[in-house]
Image 1 (tube, rainbow, N blue to C red):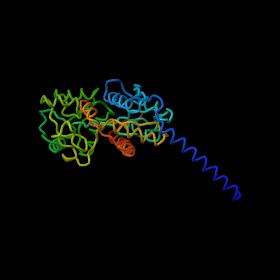
Image 2: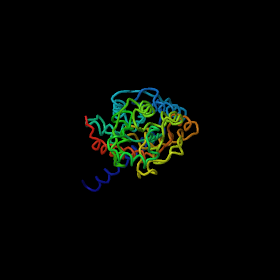
Image 3: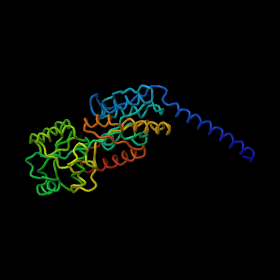
Image 4: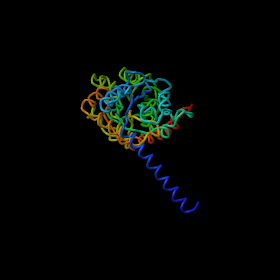
Length: 327
């Protein structure tokens, strides 16, 4: 190509780039111009659904466009996740992402989506610590005592979770791995059932969510030894973390966030991130989530992406340690 022709080509390329940038900026500034759908992979009434409906209400008020929650249940949330992964990258379809979503890639070899490649993380919204509880008859009064007891009786103690492959199950297996103890896993159908089983003395210990554990703790039917989050839980401020209690570096929580399909313009993602941060960090929202045993925890897009990446990698290692069969 001769120099004059090359210069003309560069000129036209620059004009096209500027035109595209103008369209991009315009679409971001005018967003949203129609209703937003928030897809939830679980049935109505759960924590993820509650968070979705609260966020939807606040987004509607702030963005002056309806935000509608749509429940698409089944297959451990993968149906909803696939639906959003294949939606137009325009910011009008969002997904409530939950901690168990990062377990699916380790358990299923042929997912129809890639949680990192096919999504643009928007923001973390809330976290909920698990509580390491024991039946009052268990002689350990703290985590170090429990670890010593477990090491002295390998395979004798057991713990309950909300099911095989659940976040609580992986929280227990991470504890076993980091503390180097042999404790037998007993799966239940839900967090409440597992907590009740510990309270009834059917099993030695469990890692229930804060909400179902609180009434049993207050009634003296359970003894709390530690919480699983990196920082102490606001609902249980006197209970130390596992990190403080002799398992340094332990950090595992249930969490909830918002993602969009990959390819949504960054300006739209940034706007959603800012709006969600504003509407979630209010006294009203904090009080509502506290009743669910959750704490408000927003983030930057990059921080949320790093969390998802970290947990996918951690879960893959735990699946190998546990020996779970990959489907």
